[in-house]
Length: 406
Image (cartoon, rainbow, N blue to C red; front, top):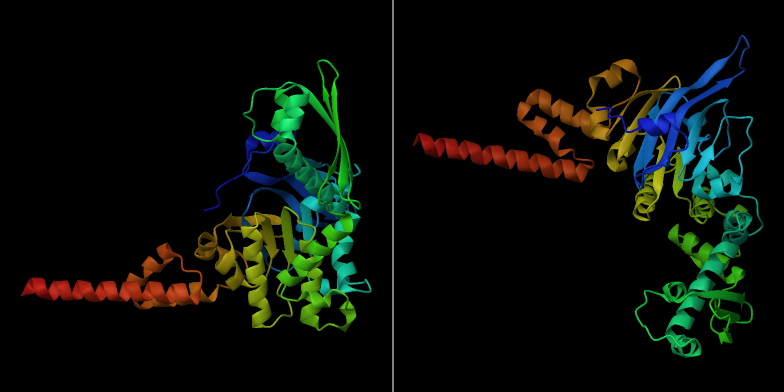
């Protein structure tokens, strides 16, 4: 347990790039409030950890252990005097250094606060969900990328023969249009008019400066169309149909407001998604919806970090758990490594997940059930299935024993 993921060369050299498996590296992060005063508090104490891509992490610990303070450093809401955070090629240095390109950081790391429904403020649901993406210029960036991809497709599959004739090109093996341009020493200039569905294209032979010019008519995507479809996609993904788009968020139920608020975060499409007590105040159905959302986010390729006091959730969906105590890492490992470590319960006030507690009680009655720790069931259904296997196996062994005696 408590395997050390952190790469020492990254810890000691901020110029080293992260490995492809690591999305975020936190090094020696320390956060103090009321520093150098009689009531000084060390909220985070020399925290270092590497977060892998496409994993679900749970940060757990007693109240006041520093969980929320820690994660608010990950997207720059809080900055400390000591420690660094590297997220892909983005580097957060200790304050008073100002975070450069903070919008890029917000796109990389987004946070769903506890009771996110309190963050709603626009007159319609569509405006509320689209606010974040528009502020980060996502519609402009993505619609331009999509229109360029469509233009390349048009040029490659509809105009390639004409272009090759213009420049006397005979070879024909290319991966895509960019490969064609590169291999033949050509340069491409274009201007796309999304509202008019056409683009002006100029291709130049860099050797003799001859040119091919064309107005390409094709179906383009406006920023407005992109953000409308993006908003609708994430609203529907949260279980509300598109008829809600024109409605006021303030007329919704509490659960619906939370769904809209989360849809607004998901619409930013971050690579790291942080949830702070995501099931607080929800009924069992709402809790399960949140767990499904966390699993779906992982399926979409995101790294998910969750703060919770509900240990059953950690066991059910977590890949990894970090236990914090007084701003430090008390221990870390897989959920089963954490919850079967007796030191956890002597060093903290953590509660056992119900499944672990039940397995413990079974093992006290019959040691054969210790096999359940190796099987690592995460749900009641999985636990029931593994118990049946153990019981049927022991029953067949007894039968074999009786037969051999005869």
